Image: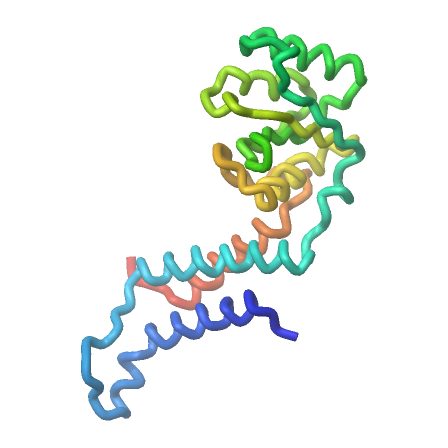
Length: 207
């Protein structure tokens, strides 16, 4: 059964095709009242943006992509409380002590939360100091916890970061597609990349 998001995806493609072929159709039809639709590169770029947004929403809603829990081995939470200190330096030391005490892996994805709002998603490979370097940034003020997702498989970390960013919609970080040669790819980013490539190929413009 076709979902609402899938129908909207089809409608976006059909509207782009109608706009592109309006001039050809008009040759065998009576002139219509009003200004005919234009077709320019900006229309293609805007359509690609909407198509990719719909792709992301559809894949996440329909659970068509791998669950985060299938990628990480362990999840831990560190809560930002007053007992951890007021200054960023003291909080950073408390975080590293907590990290060391639990013997956590140095390959992880970390997610900063301000209650129910995701502030930032990042990753670190072969290191544990990366998360606490963000304690000095302005957006860290108001953060309430840090979720740490560990994976013994290093090649899955970029993919895990990418999927977490798609799911949690952080305010201060952007999608960084995992494209290194030996690393797992993010299925959402790959689908969006192919849509950009194919739509631009179908609706080409002279340079």
